[in-house]
Length: 422
Ligand SMILES: *Cc1c(COP(=O)(O)O)cnc(C)c1O
Image (cartoon, rainbow, N blue to C red; front, top):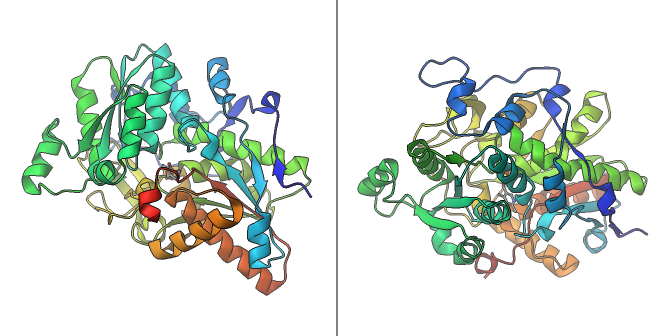
């Protein structure tokens, strides 16, 4: 029995996959809040470098991964696909469960896949400083790492509650040369306003994005980098799903259910998007996005245009949203505390191509601990959402007496989240 499927470095995908080329519908464009018309390239070019904007708007099916990016990917990719045999035995399920393990990346999550690409395109476009936000710190760590690789300064607004709960990631960012400010902060007009209203404001991704954008708009050679939600971010993450496809083919498996946790949609999108054409061609395959019950954008949000940040500085995106002012409860899965969703994933949910479910925090930690004991990997609390739903599907397979192939993305390790476990 194959327990672990490894690809060789030479088998690394050489192109990212753009699902927009294959969808039978066009996404609603991002709108300029001042005119309510599609936002112009020039306006977006104030915050993003042109190569990334071109990817954002492209409907070309494949995009070549630059050599410089491949070289960085090769440090930790291809990542393994592992069969969760001990979890299968524990659940006594006829399902075969596989997980793609992204925790082997330099900063411990899938986020380096896009951080490296974004740092590269910014570098060749003349950017000196990248400004960003981070929730639990994974994105800030990934971008600090990528920035250090390509000689860029990185400035990170970190959601205050995570800054306090997760000091370790602050050290990682600093080690790679990033500078970290808890958000809301005194550094921006928006942060100052929020702190005047409530000095205890725990912050949120929406607020931190607002502060990062205000900072970028004030500086000349600074650009903004977003770790999720946008088309180009999901595009870079498809390296995950493309590898999964090759790995499953190697062992002659075909997936029945693909599962990933959903914060802004990047690890989920990266996992499922390369499989979407199979479903559109009629293959019986399900995609399930898993979110926290306390921040249920896909399961309880409204499908409409909304801002990506709380300050109202981003273009309006058509997505499932809990409203830009929604401040999610202080759950440990900081990376899932986002009011919105990726427009691509939102539309796939709307079209019933993707399903969404949610679980409460007690439940996901129960499964996370069990998974750690059985499989030997302590998952990030975010990834624990995917594990929880995988277990539910495996139990259903047992009740139905059906052999199913379930694949989930273990988006990151939880070694820096031990206080959450404690
Ligand atoms: C950031 C993060 C997430 C959530 O972000 P998505 O864009 O939805 O993938 C999930 N898991 C881990 C480990 C993360 O770092």
